[in-house]
Length: 133
Image (cartoon, rainbow, N blue to C red; front, side, top):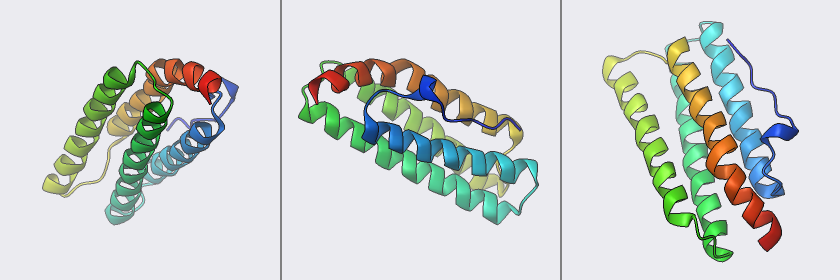
């Protein structure tokens, strides 16, 4: 499994958001290692649940900052958050219904959406917030 490394390319130049993103990267890496090392299904499910819960909290944190500082792209950014949340919850429900753990392909999906969101919408938001805050 690929491990994500936090580096300057993932920074959105807003320290509190970067801190959240570091935590999400850490959780992603814990999950990736757990799947690669064939940890128990219960452990992998617990890490998946924690990653999703932290992601939900983080999205609300970003949205609060965007509201506070009058970010014009809030509606579009929030819509992307809702799409990502729906995808994550669908994955979580599928895993629970099938009583199985996350596969390596699903870990790769989570990586793509985490990194893709940071490089896309979050970089735009960060450029605005780093000036507004």
